[in-house]
Length: 86
Image 1 (cartoon, rainbow, N blue to C red):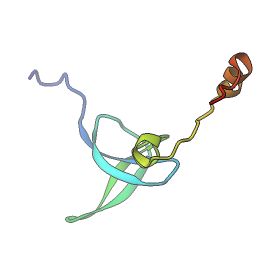
Image 2 (tube, rainbow, N blue to C red; image 1 turned 180 degrees about the vertical axis):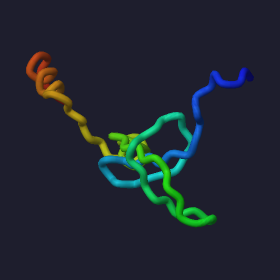
Image 3 (cartoon, rainbow, N blue to C red; image 1 turned 90 degrees about the vertical axis):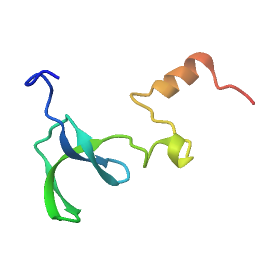
């Protein structure tokens, strides 16, 4: 690999905005916010990235079916095409 052309790959904590669940992984993302994370070597400070959906809140992984309606798109669709009768 060529030196100096790859982004910095470092530990980052991702936190789900809905559930509050957090996990530590490696990423190239950076953030001004930090969080103290307990490790076997002691407490360390890592960048914190807030995400809207993670495996803790995604309907596929949780088994909950929910509609995320951004700007009334679901209602607009139902007005235009009607609601399907099962």
